[in-house]
Image 1: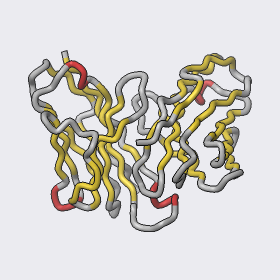
Image 2: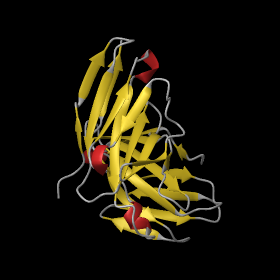
Image 3: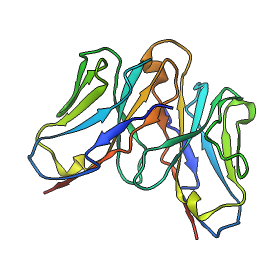
Image 4: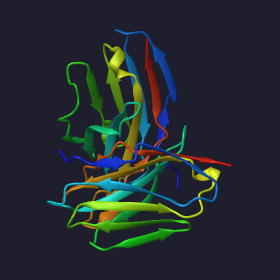
Length: 111
Length: 118
């Protein structure tokens, strides 16, 4: 079983601030790294799936980078908005389709 | 495209009672997963089905939890008898699970069932 860690556990920012979170995962037998956004009472929503070292993906104000050699990924949010408030989960899978999730980063954006 | 459906959305039971959750995956998705997410922790895989066969149930507490996927489509997860520590959100997810590309392993989640055991 993989050990996936996320930090920080929670984060409070003001509207307009930019922020970033970290996901660390075992680099051996790496296959893919997934980021999900989970709003309260809704389904977790897939943000990115990343497989290549050095990969960088962007969706609107959210972007993510991947370093498979050292086993970490960063998620960035530029100019946070209250609607960005959610729990951000990362998950790693190794040569298969079983995902191991980190504990999540809970983001709260104050207007 | 319809998403993953789950019911009920919320359930409150007393300890030692039984409870069942239902999941209908996205049409055509061969792989179905059940996760348990305890407050403050990430989702933990309980069981994974490929069509109607079990691929991985190593983290399923088999003395009280059971799951089935009849005809390789819908699935039910049952807890009997429930304990206080079973209070959690139970998430169902599905994926295509057929090709070697990472995107085909992308899992689509239902809204979950929030279980409270008192």
